[in-house]
Length: 281
Image 1 (cartoon, rainbow, N blue to C red):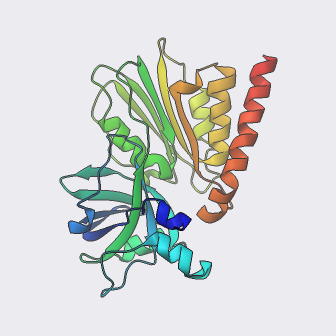
Image 2: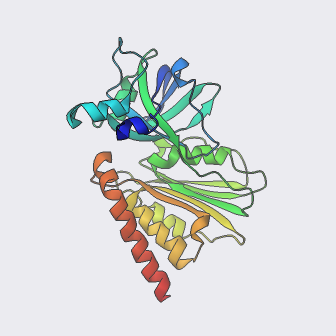
């Protein structure tokens, strides 16, 4: 028996496009449904994510798709390309995904902008593990456009009576989205106007006068500013690692394939720097 036969086959779900909506000039919402998602389920994590498989299936391709067989039997050039996206919501059999659209460049955003009802898309997952903690005194949510779907889902799941400070950096005011009307959730939008991602977010979070009590922090987005904010939270403020969800969704100058290949080494480097700083403090 081969190694592939011994391992459980990974489930590839196939969603059918039900609706497409342009939320902002650079954010496209695609709602997937259909019987191909009958086995899909999330666990309540507000950072749930899926791996989308490109190219999407052709009109006459069967629903069933054995990704492991494709990777075992075909050359790498014929393997599907994966792109990771946050689940904005999963409700009543409908999977909502928000795509950042940068014009006719890239892969997933271009597909989303051109998607029409009836189109199909394969995906793996979900993964994830963060949700607002009712035991925390307050929450800090910070990120760029790539983290906005998870931040928005987290805001909707914030426990009653638990305040939050939310920082979202986008390119300009047209990219803002309505997140909440709760008076105890303070949302700060930052507009970089073509600047370096994180150039406004990092100083904004640094300038926050942290409320008293135990905080849970969710910080995601471009890897360089995530590293800076992780250092602030872990080294300078001494917050416990288990109270943080901090990760780079992408890295400036790298496509997803390049970032995912280098991310383990990047994480080890960041953790080593952090351990050294904490050890010398």
